[in-house]
Image 1 (cartoon, helix red, strand yellow):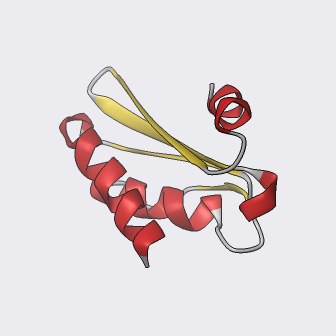
Image 2 (cartoon, helix red, strand yellow):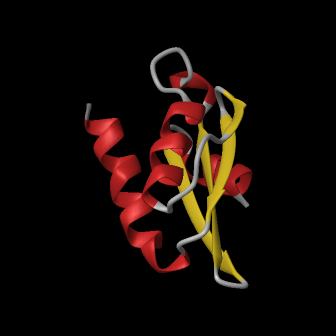
Length: 86
């Protein structure tokens, strides 16, 4: 799904949060033209921290993580946005 959003936007960052069984997952995708400046791994870690999770990983263009606090999905997206703002 994140790959599809990346294709649709052309250049940018896609951040998605999903909830299942009371837990949340976050995926961040960064288009190839931005990976020299923006790391999906660093962004997903910011989102995971907001969800009460630790770590997260992947590649510079795609990373995923999770956390136990599904109610904080909007906060995870806000944390990713704040990390992008610097």
